[in-house]
Image 1 (cartoon, rainbow, N blue to C red):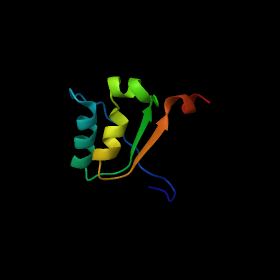
Image 2 (image 1 turned 60 degrees about the vertical axis):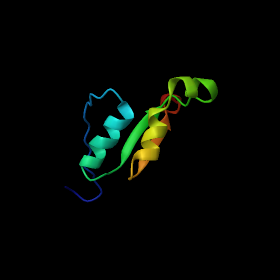
Image 3 (image 1 turned 90 degrees about the vertical axis):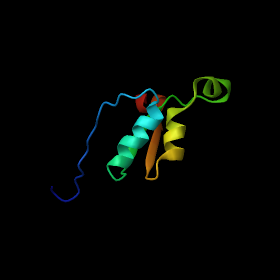
Image 4 (image 1 turned 135 degrees about the horizontal axis):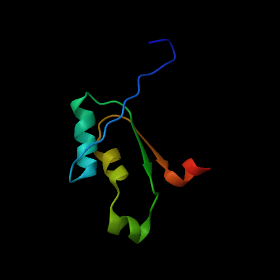
Length: 74
């Protein structure tokens, strides 16, 4: 691979708990950087709906980059 380039991969995961599925998938491949988009909910909406991104950040032993989805639109 040429200098300054990085291999990027993606996968569609099927797990009843998305946070567990993501974390297990990445850990099984010796970690790496996880990049996720989030709705950026807070307060009662976050409590009621949960936060997959927050759980992946907490449970993943490697690096996780989280970007609010509305920031991607700008």
